[in-house]
Image (cartoon, rainbow, N blue to C red):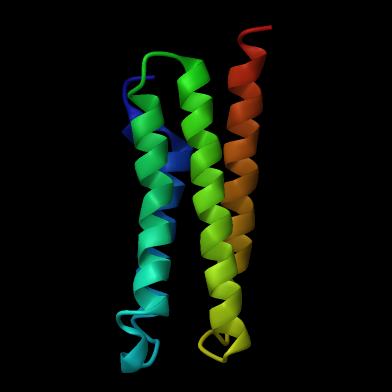
Length: 117
């Protein structure tokens, strides 16, 4: 692996950030510094932790940061569920994107763990 930018999970997480920003831009103006801002921060945390983990010295640390990215993904999912429940999200396709990314990250963790058996 050359850098984190070569990882499909990183590329997919960047795409998710873009989709989240487009979605959050449709929220009411009064949410700009509340739920909308929190959703944006959570989404940014996912590729950021993948990148940081990839830059660490070994797979054990990388795996730790991948789990942190899954934590951020779960946080984002919760915030998006709240947004859906209060009527800010009418087309919940973003949840499939979250599920796909979660499965990809978990598969990559399993792969990395398998390298050290």
